[in-house]
Length: 129
Image 1: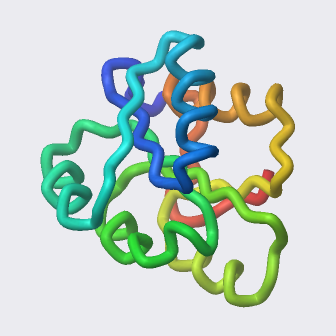
Image 2: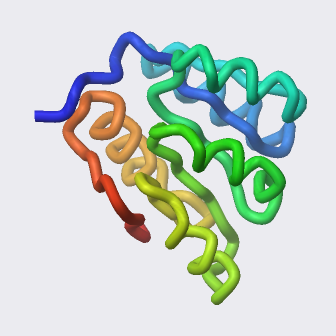
Image 3: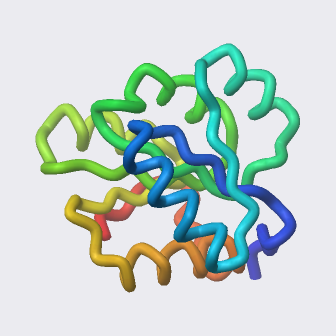
């Protein structure tokens, strides 16, 4: 069984409006949640291995994908649509999920719960949820 991530924090890297809403929802559900303002903060924080999950969007977070891929942190990438460029990006992640907006709240929370509880682990690929 994969290691539990309950003691780790969820990192949200997204546009401020979504970040505030997502932060509030996840915090209400009992998760430790943080946001990062810029890529230099991200690199330092990723090296501390304190995150159990990263939530970001495409194309907003695309400039950070290379830094994220260097670490073994499950990532949920949110997108308005799927195209060949996004699929190409997802294929380079070791452990990622892609959800299409608008988000289904129940599916989103179920995925977060399973990832943070160590119930899901797709090492070596991605899944479109």
